[in-house]
Length: 86
Image (cartoon, rainbow, N blue to C red; front, top):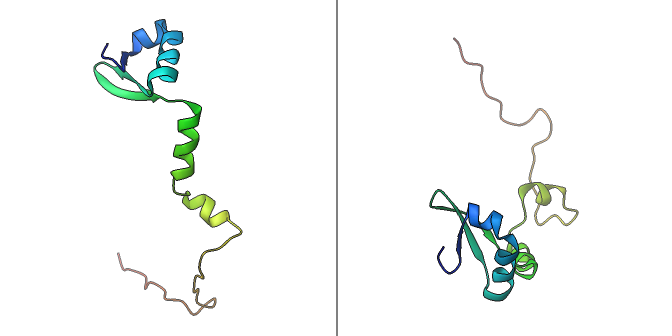
């Protein structure tokens, strides 16, 4: 295991050690079959990352604070596609 890389078997067997390493040394990478798969980080780091994340489309659409106006044509006046012949 590299200084901050843990094989999944070691991470499972030594979870307390993995957790302590995360708290003392920073993010710890877990590998599966030699490929980096996950990272264990502190809750402080997680909360900071969440604050930096862009909002999802769903949260934007459900937001009460609309950032702009969307011009929609009146019903029946929008562009319609012509049916295609098969």
